[in-house]
Amino acid sequence: MISLEEARTRINRDLIVLPIVDVPITAAREMVLAETVTASEAIPPFANTAMDGYAVRAVDTRGATKTSPKVLAVSATVPAGGVAPRALESGEAMRIMTGAPMPEGADAVVMVELTRPAGFDVMILAEVPPGNHVRPAGDDIRPGTEVFHPGTLLTPGHLGVLASIGRETVKVYRRPRVGVMSTGDELVEGPQPLQPGQIRDSNRLTLLSLVAEAGCHPVDLGLIRDDERAIRTALDRAVEQTDAVITSGGVSMGDYDLIKAILSDLGDFNWMQVAIKPAKPLAFGVMTGTPVFGLPGNPVSSMVSFELFARPALRRMMGRLDAERPHLWALAEDGLRREPDGKTHFLRVVVTQRGDGAWRVRSAGGQGSHHLLAMASANGLAVLPDGDGVEPGGSVRVMYLG
Image 1: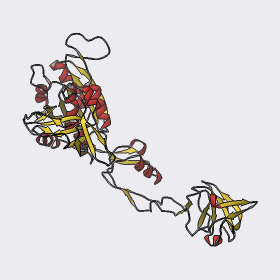
Image 2 (image 1 turned 90 degrees about the horizontal axis):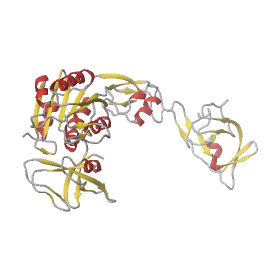
Image 3 (image 1 turned 45 degrees about the vertical axis):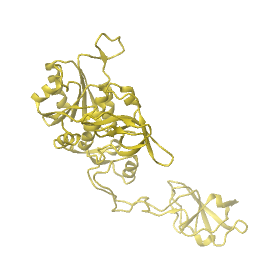
Image 4 (image 1 turned 135 degrees about the horizontal axis):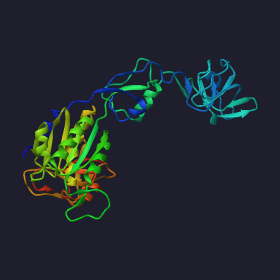
């Protein structure tokens, strides 16, 4: 067996970051920026009001109180999207709506709650300083500002900034197309009654969903029988239409575990027995430049193997700097027991956070590689080095899946 670190090293050395593409900002969410974005204009582009109220000269409000208001003549109304018809003169106010440009000559805004209408005039009930509720031009972004740099993961907030500075497209690392196939004569699909020896294929849907959750484009490659020609044909087609391929099943030691033998013939592949539980068997290699991950067929092993090997690799291919799941230290409330066997165990756990900010974990249920319900209930994998596990109240490192 080899260590988890060695297996991951073998995978990472064969990975390449996908090409840079120019995409509309409407399609760039959760993609990684591959250029420096520089603003060519100010945001906001003009001084505007942060409040509904009255644009004034601050000096004209000096000494104003509720009991001794200042009375100003209302000379115009400035809506958002409009402009003042002329400059504001001394002794005047203009009704102004949030986001509207400040009239020339005005240097403050009195919010409407501190005013009282008086016919064609307005009573100002409080003194305000210059700049009150005014957002200056360039207050957020000045022309020439480098707003984002390569490696930035584009979230909705980033896309809003790009739209505000007039960008329609942006250079990003391409999102990988990832094909997923299941193999095995025992697998069937649909609700029909199971015949002796049959099980329903759950891995393919699970892995396709994990691929999408990782930020990639999932491609369903179907269910392939344990037939060497069929598997070869499916793999040949898969590497032509995808950037990476994930297979489920056929990588163990059985006589019908064909994936590892076929992959060895088709490309430069490593078949590994990794010192972890679950997910010990793993195949990885490259076919005509396309990485292929051969994951085990047991449902939990397939998911854990994806989390440990495929997910971080796929995210590196798309330029993600946050390729790895976060790790945290938590209190094992009831303890997490295991038997020494020379492997690192990844126990499925439920992670919660106390009011004081401390993390705690408990077992999600059955820990067998077929206990998919417990895996579905888990939001973390407790990392247990070789040994007897963690006593109740002990500290454990957790890969957080939440």
